[in-house]
Image 1 (cartoon, helix red, strand yellow):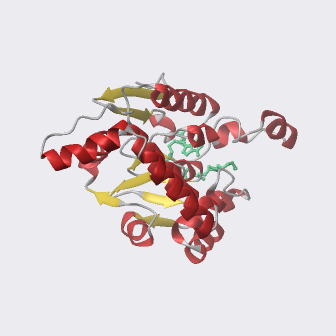
Image 2 (cartoon, helix red, strand yellow):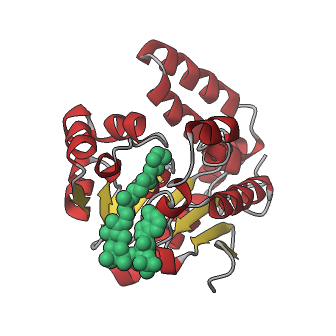
Length: 258
Ligand code: CO8
């Protein structure tokens, strides 16, 4: 199981990606991030898939960027190769919902990867942290931007500057994770949530994801205008017609994802 950096499966309309460097606490090296990006884009392009679950193992979702790989890099190495931007940001191109199911450690780049997903669910033993300060580095895979948006400046500054970890209870209370579940149920809960999401119209899901993400990026006035256009566009959707008619006819609906 240790050879492939990610393991990919499908469960109905759900794509499941398991991060798979268990001996290195799923430390995120180039091979893993390349494979993860490829798997995400493959599921995004697959008409049979509507939602994606990303999961690690019981010890770690991911304990960060691979420190052993980074230790010898120079400024010119990371600048020329466009470190992080080159293969970590592939997830930003994914238009279908992505759920991060986190057990154990989600540290540094592992926490930032989870933050780049659309919904986080956590096992009771999950621990989140951005400890880059302990290496005299900084959370450079979106952490300084996404964490304050997710949990506010006070707690984000606390975590980034002190390097402390946050447990699952605090993470849920702070709005970092949507749900906390028993560790042995994490995978099933992640797939169950994704299966519920995947039972809906795919273009409607994509429009909602795009609209909610817009809330992070622009003013309320612009965001509301964007949302309104997305709503109007729903009236051109066969699935929306089917959804409303099936309700009125009191019959089971069937989505064609159009
Ligand atoms: N990179 C490389 N190897 C790692 C990493 C990592 N991030 N984390 C764990 N490992 C390795 C360990 O070296 C160890 O290897 P070995 O068996 O050969 O000694 C193996 O995984 C098992 O780990 P431990 O023995 O340490 O297991 P413990 O249960 O004792 O501890 C911890 C688990 C607490 C997760 C501990 O391993 C740890 O603190 N890891 C490092 C956490 C960390 O600092 N993460 C942040 C890294 S920097 C980062 O992510 C930056 C990303 C942003 C962009 C780039 C800017 C830097």
